[in-house]
Image (cartoon, rainbow, N blue to C red; front, side, top):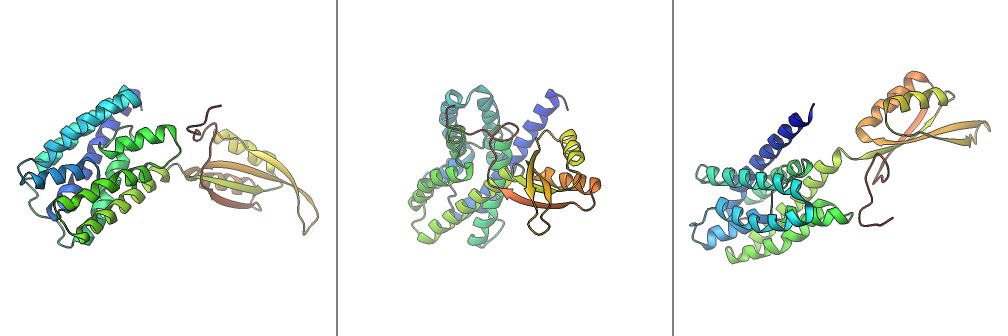
Length: 289
């Protein structure tokens, strides 16, 4: 896939993410007066405080114009271009779909908050994974995570707490406040799950007599090094070799298959690791060499 096709695919995914985001807001949150945080949450408050005169899409656009100005300075023009695109598309979807969705898809407020949280999290994660943003507190999360090893989901959650508390201005009801915080928690979990799912790593210990051949096959197929460690089997008292390799979780199954094909008697263990930092994996942020 050439560079142009990659960029086209990236913008199409951002568009899809914004569509999911808009449907989540208009189909599950706004009709119930549930404020879920972010620019959409602030726009919901403005919508009801204005007596439903100012559409959600308009205030969403205005709020994000201010935030984009900050993002352009801190995160660079590439982030800004994709974010501007996402904001324009998101504003268009919110403005176009709001008249078409006069009522919530689900009458139960609690279920609405759960479903909206999942959909919103997916929409945000899609946009963030392509270098864009759905705007609002997503921008705050991207700024902080650029310099610190803090998950985007948690930063979004912290930023949204105050916005959700402001929902009392349009619906002075603690029950409504609870729905907003439930939705926020679901968004945080979903964003982290979608964003880190494909980045999770696995550490494999491989015990085999054919360690040289297994190591060669693995390094030929993957751009990851293999460490060979001398060890002794306590039960047999025999000297052995143990291979240690860290790969992305989606690569782990193929590594296991390679080892099994080379040595049918291979013994292997696999553990999920919380984070891998270094060449070929993630960088440590906020720490100077």
